[in-house]
Image (cartoon, rainbow over all chains, first blue to last red; front, side, top):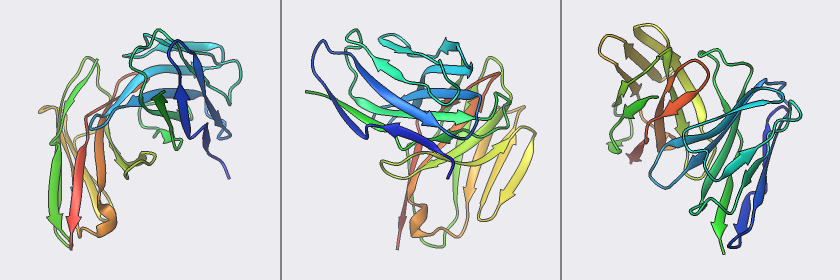
Amino acid sequence: DGGITQSPKYLFRKEGQNVTLSCEQNLNHDAMYWYRQDPGQGLRLIYYSQIVNDFQKGDIAEGYSVSREKKESFPLTVTSAQKNPTAFYLCASRPGTASNQPQHFGDGTRLSIL
Amino acid sequence: GQSLEQPSEVTAVEGAIVQINCTYQTSGFYGLSWYQQHDGGAPTFLSYNALDGLEETGRFSSFLSRSDSYGYLLLQELQMKDSASYFCAASDDYKLSFGAGTTVTVRA
């Protein structure tokens, strides 16, 4: 079955530690996205990538980094510079960037501070 | 960027009709999407409007008025499984901007 796989489902970070969230898709989609969701709030865009080896900052990129070395993979690193990382992180993809194409989401990773 | 406003909560009984309004302020607007998210789950796509008018998909319909910067999602014949959060999202060139979401609670 085609889809988006995020791992781990739950992640705990110690103070001063960088952690990396995995996102893999086998849908052959060009565009991939990372969102952060806080309780009672909508999804806020962290980074997005329209094509391999290219990515752009979203609305809340500070304290995060990404890479897009392969079409199917778009890992997100939450660095120690992100002072409030506790949130639900969602990865999404879509075939291209045409506005009528829906985004497909993974099941998310919940990150907490120890 | 985009700014979207939608009500935070709506409660209705099974079989009822619920309308979730969404107003947006944009700097570049291509269309309005709606996503459903059950508690703790992944958002799933419901509908997309690029042009003014009503789009119907089963029990759900979505409407857009570009001149009013306004859209709505209509949920008909409500079922218990429709209890979820619903997000409107505005498209610009390459990405979506989401509203804060409307929690719909369906009561028996």
